[in-house]
Length: 223
Image (cartoon, rainbow, N blue to C red):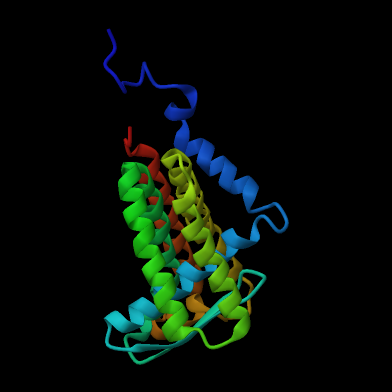
């Protein structure tokens, strides 16, 4: 007799949960208006990764800006320019994996990790947001994170958090390729200037990190 939670007793949605969430994330980011909050989350975790890298290497964050189209900008001072530049895309990979992972481990763990994100969002609003547009976008992200706590069924809470993690991770795989445009602008160009390693190599490294993150989550056993 199969054991409880063995592969033989799992439903289709439980067995293929990760791939179904990934498919849903791919679809959601293509739907006008509905995709905007997910794009803002993606942008935020990219920019806050720059900022946290600056702080951890002895620098500081001057301000963070988010734009309606999903773009963003983190202005920092001091710290390691190499690490700050590298950890925009790399940090987004780690955030995407961490959010999905902690959303999946246990329902209560998902709530605790959401509380950590709320603290991070509030800190960003208080200390590093300087313009009205960025404030409005951050307020929307904070509201979405808080609303999840109103869900009576914690399974839905987990699914919402998993979708956010999946969209962040997918964007961290796709967005570095936008740097390969011949203009020599952005994090890849900065790293190329600092290291003499071509921008394309850095794009490939970020892409590989994202793929490794996907593989890690696909192989993880949460049930």
